[in-house]
Amino acid sequence: MGAVAVLMNHTPPAWGEKKVVGALFMDVRSAFSKASKAHLGRRTEALEIGPDLTRWTGSFMTDRQVKLVLDGEAGEANPMDTGIPRGSPAAPILFVTYLSGIFDEAERAVPGIRRLSFVDDIGWPAGGKGDEAAAFINWATSNGVAFDNGKTEAAIFRKKKPPPPTTAAVKVGAGYRPIQ
Image: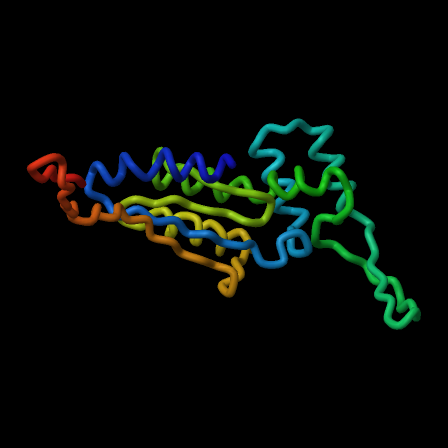
């Protein structure tokens, strides 16, 4: 519901300024599995989360292994040094922390931008020049975050001109009365 409220509050004022209003909806590709431990550590420090939680986060993502099981046969365990483990209550919090830099960068480039996000799905309402998209795509590229182009959607919200009024008349007594 919050995303709809943001769009509803953002759109009419932009229309009042004669701007075209749109939104770009993006999905972070392989969001949890490609998260870098080093980048997550830098984000926890940048957010001043605290040294104990920063160390815990690093430990949480260290010395992990993955084993594939196909048709009931388990393969060899292999070290895994990227990705946020799914299934943990901490996973959504760690992922939002990991991705938080994209929001900071977009807000620096376009003051007042609003974002819509739910885990690995991000929406950017835009009304104007499109600086928003350049800011977060540049950040994503330099921080190893990729978007799934097949799941990216753009929407344009335009103020529909009301249809011209139609008039009809109803006979009232001896005369006719127009109605709309």
